[in-house]
Length: 180
Image (cartoon, rainbow, N blue to C red; front, side, top):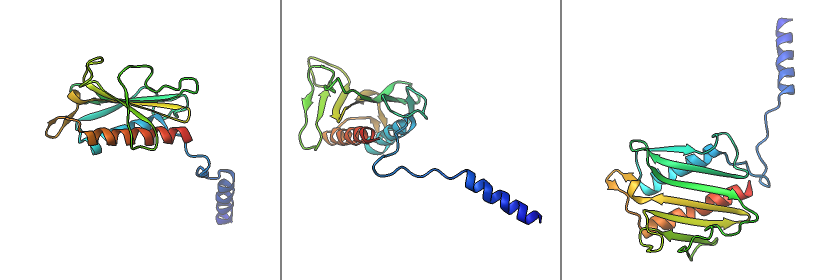
């Protein structure tokens, strides 16, 4: 008798709390602030060889990126920013460069990417390389601060290949949130 009651309770419990179904291909899962930071941290570590990093989301890690998201990667020791990615739904702001002079449109990618290399730009001198893209109604920017980013062998020295990988990363990330 006890076994029958426990079995009935387990069956009833299973029936009242169905497991959530995975998102359908037509409706991809929403990207969270935490996933944005994890992606950025992974890119810096795996693609640029950066070490001693911490990801700092602007918003709660569990929040979804619906109006937008920002994450900064900092050096854990110096607490200085190594880079930042920002994504925002901007249906009425079609310029992902936000009007900053000096961006150059790249070629060779399916989606447009503009690059501002402040290390060599006399109008906007600085220590960053900034990439920008627009996919659908989403604008994305990715900033890499070369002189603050440490690798196992010293300060990061961005190559053209690094910047190309960063452009691909930004496009894929922006595409992912634009479909969610």
